[in-house]
Every structure is written in C-alpha cells, then in structure tokens.
Length: 577
Image 1 (spheres, one colour):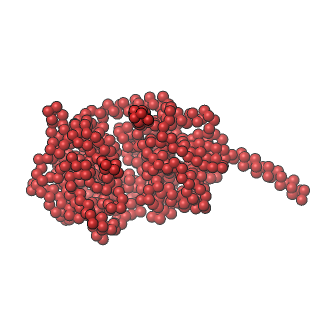
Image 2 (image 1 turned 180 degrees about the vertical axis):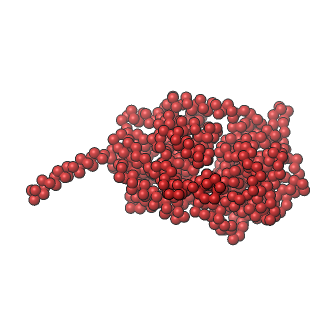
Image 3 (image 1 turned 30 degrees about the horizontal axis):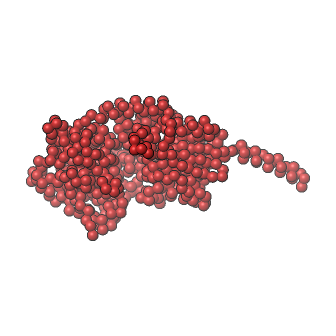
C-alpha cells in the first residue's frame, strides 16, 4: 500500500501541474461580423447631435485599453467585411483588408459576400491579409481538402484558443454559383460541405473541433451561418445542437443581435452564442474562463485609434470625391422599406425603388445601347437603401446598389421567364426572398394561396418547376402596339439584368443558366441607374429632376409608371383571399 501511494502521489502532482500548465485562464475575445464596409458611421448622441459611430479605430482602441488593464485579448471577424458600400467596391475589397491588417485582426472567416468579386479575387485578397482566414467546410471538389485552414490556434496571453471557421452553404446562391465552377460552368471545382439534412456540415465541423481540441484550451466556432430559421438545417443553432466540444460560437450572416444566448450541444452542455448585428452597430466582447462564459455588445466607445482613423479617412475622402457629384434632383423619396412600419418590402412585393432600378436597365439597353430589350429585372436582395428627396448623386445610386454587379442582356423563352418569376415569388406570403424580382416592361400577379412546390438542388439551385404556378397573368409591354400582351411561353424575349442572375445563377436562378447572351459586361448596375437619373427632363434650374412625368419612359403610352407611389406602379399584384 505504501509503495502504491508513493507512486500515486507523484502521479497526482504531475497531473495537477499539467492541468495548471494547460491553464484555462480567462481570455477576452473581441469580434465583429457583417461590417459590410460601413467604415464611416455616425450616430446621434443623447442631445440628438450626430457624432462618430463605431469603426475599426474603436476596435483597436478598445483592444489596446483592455490589454493595458492586463487582459489577454484576441480580435476576430465572422465574415462579410469586404463588400457592401462603395468603400469596398471601389477597389474590390483591398482597402478593407488593409484596414484589418492595420487593426491586427488575429483571424477571420469567410462570409458569402466575400465571394462577390469572384473566387480568384478573394484568394488574392487572402494572400494580402496578414491574418488567416479559416473555413472547415470550404473544400476543393476534387479531393475534399480545405481551401483555407479549418481552424487556427491563437495564443491569447498564456492560453491557446482555437477558432474553427464555418461558411454558410447558402454561399452558393447568395453569392454567385458560377464562381465555384470551372470556366465552362459544367461542374463545381469548389464545394461547401452542407447536406440536405445538415449532416455533412455537422460531420465536417465535428472533425475540425476534434482536431482543434487536441491543440487548444478553448475551442470557439467562428461561423457565418446565422440563426434565421429559413437557413435551417445550416444555422448556428443547428450546428451547436449536432456537435460537441465547443466553448462558444461567434456568428454572422443573419444580421441578428444576440448578446448572450446559451444553446445545448449534442451532449447537453451549454454553448455561448453571440452575434453583433451588422454595419458596425456593435462590437462584441466575450469572456471565457473555467467557471463561466459571457458576452456583451458595446454600441459605443469613447476612444478611437488615430492611426486607423487617418487611414480610413484618406480612403473615404478619395471615394467620396468620386461619388458625390450631383447628377439629378429627386422630387420624391424612394423606398425599399415600408415608409410607415419601416419593415423591408423589396424582397416580397413591388416598391418604387424596384421599379426605378428595373426601368434604368430597361431604358439603358433600349435607348443608350440601342438594343432591343423586351423586359428587365432587378433582384430585391440587391436593393439596399431608401433614398430621401433632394440631391441625387452617384453615391445615391451606389447606396441602393452597393454590390457592383455587371449588367448584361440575354435571350430567354417565355417558359424560362415564367419559371424565373415563379422562383422569385416562391416565398411570398410566408417570408422574403433576395431573388424576388422587381420588373420593367412587364406585369404579373402572385397567388400566395398556391403552395410552393419548386424543387431545388442541395446547393439551393432551381431543379424542377412547380406542380402549379402561383405566378399568373404575365403580360409583356409591346412598344410598337403600346400595350401589354400576354406572355407567350414559346416565344423568345430579350431580358436585361444582372450578370449575377442571368448568367451566374445568383440566388439560385439555374433555369437561366443556358440563356443566350446578347451582350455582356455593359456596365456596373449603379452606373446604369445613374445614367437613367441623368436622362430625366431638366427643370428651370438646369438640373435633371426625377419624377414620373420627367422620366424618359413617360412618353411610352400606357406604360405603368408611378414613382410617386412608394408601393410602385402596379406591375406586381399580390392576390388576396
């Protein structure tokens, strides 16, 4: 017995020393998500005065102050940071990467909008970044090897924290599917582990957790999944519930404000979940230690780093000078949201912004390019901002259409057009859809009482049409007869719109993937809209004034045109029962 004790006591001491050395000491993790290049922000103080909002300078100052207090701090981002406003689009994300380099981020994951400039562009930006990008489920289709590391272990003080990156499988359709395919667009060369039941995603994440656990004291998911039920079974809640070994989950994608929520994992353990919202509305601050996990969202900070602020200001001034040139006066306000409730409308019904943007493409192809354009479409998800009356500039157009998508003209059959309208309208009555189609040169009705029976692929692409169409009474405007004529399913029509939708299957519009190209790369979306605004009739002040009567389309007899109505010109009718 004495001999056994003499052996056991040193062993216990070694175990205790090992556990202490491993040291799950407290760590602080600062995090951002869905910044979307909102690098210059203002907010109102308690007196109603506009003051600077949160920024990369705020993040740096906060981190430095916490470190000065003796805290061990890491700084991470959960995706969608290089796209959203002209500040990102002007150099396709490069300046944002430079700001994050200057801020000394430790690690970031990939949001779906990181792919909006193309996968090749993203991979080149990743090389510029001085911090690693992680995504365990973004793999090469040929060998299932991760394109980026699955996780990164960061030493935070004396403690090692592993950040496991997770991309949303919705990236296929919420970016551009063609970016993940070969040049012939016949097969995917990259894929995102998902599974219709989510199992492929869960298994991929669990494998990364298991590997990371061997190398770190804490394991934190850095995900761009969101908690929107429409994203199931690929939400952060789904992943937590079907995996084990995580200490926390820093989330993005759904723009949800989740300060501190505990979700049970597959073993019944509580996992801390948090998300800051979007557009630098808050900075997340998470604390992990052996006894508890907590998080809070900071919506303001009293200090900002001057060096970062100077870098941002210099770039913002360059962009602003290029975009702030006044090109027209808007005699009316434009809406993507309900003017009363402020609820978003543009992804589920017609708005005057949708009409205006679709008309811009319709006008440009017909009148500027002098091509035949029978109709034009605009994705509701690509229209991002209300605009007030008054000065209208390139910046105004860019604020509404921030993604810098290129316009093209294609030929489609009447059946393909009907399928596209149906796909965009599939969630009307039950939710919103980024692929909801605002239109020019046509009108149609939607019957929400007809169930959505469209079938999609595992990647969310259109696969098979419905058993019954909820889109009805489709009419195309004929410029010669100056009247709306019934859609002919066998006829070929020319349609203008975004490359994103018409050629690259954005939002899942695979029924258009074989459309015959008439003209590609006509120009960026917001520049075409700006050209339309400049074409409005001039007032006595010599400036173009945006109103229905001044539109270059106003001379087209019987054409539905009513920008003064926030809910549009009556081109899309939702049948009520």
